[in-house]
Length: 231
Image (cartoon, rainbow, N blue to C red; front, side, top):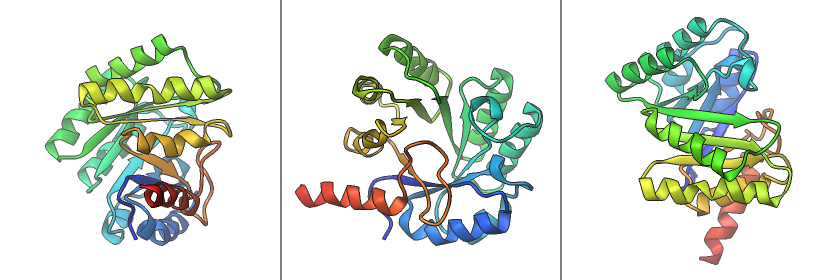
């Protein structure tokens, strides 16, 4: 059963055939499937759009923001533009990417009615509340359809600062994914949904995680069901 709240299952496999099999297996549990093009030895787009009946988010995360893509930015954005034109529901592009390339992708995405997630990740720490608000405001002004802010939590205060971004997102009517990585941040991956977060991310049951502290989709569904039972 597809969850009523948005759980995105992230698929990161080096072999495209294996990635397609994992995506197909997770489709019944996901509201969205993220296909990590940067993880594939030979990235492909069409098979996922043609064979998976779930909205697809294509991400090609560069090495400089925790991903595996080491080619040029032009090559990376060419892949993302191919995804936009090839039937993606969403694409993810980093706030720290070159603005000219990012704005071009946004324009193409609008033409094809594809939603763009503008993301920002910190795999080492969590910034101050003021710095996080600055990042959030920059995402809002960027033309993004959805923002995504993910940091590494070292203590509960880090978690609370990131989750507090949902207040501003609600006031500005701006869809936002905001949660933390690491063991301490696990709870935020569930709590963000209860606080109005646009979407949270999980790993497929038979595939690798894409970030520290990421829960399997089955574990995430069990947690969400526990909340629903108490309502």
